[in-house]
Length: 267
Image (tube, rainbow, N blue to C red; front, side, top):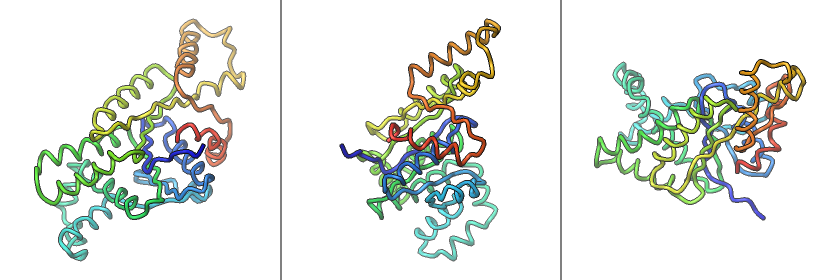
């Protein structure tokens, strides 16, 4: 059976849960399936050395660059847009209203997808609030502006996101009660803020605790009762959710490569 791929995959979650590793592994999986896929990272300092080592297909876009292109189109002058983006006012504006820049960049990515119907973008969203802000900001700015060019652009973005098989969001979490609770709350908020679409986000558990059990670095029998309870709880979390195994490799590139074979479940 031929798999049905989505056009835009977003990987999000709290810091340190493995979003970047999983997003890169998923990109490599799609690449292995001969998909026209590009990896995009919102991080201020993308892991370019790792991207190069993995020969990862990427699409580089910065918020400032996207904003400059967007303003240039509206003013019919990239020169004026470049000057505007260098002013203290606009620099301060994007710092005070981060959702504005995120929304513009998301629109830029969607534009690339519309230009090339074969393209798939994997978006590595750097923080749990980032993905939520992207979806919230489009609705908020639409309410603020009500009509005009910006609202027309927002409607175009939301129309794409509503499209069948256009969007899929994965929330990555560790196998701990606190992490799962935070990820579940984020999943609910994301689902509530998706623009009138049946698309929903999925929870993916990063099964990191197996590092200790599988390598026999600890003996469960001699654990204090509170740690035994913690281990049992983590086992229960893993059992009840789709989980990715711990990969015992020293090099990040090896971890990404070995995780690739598990990515078919995330399509």
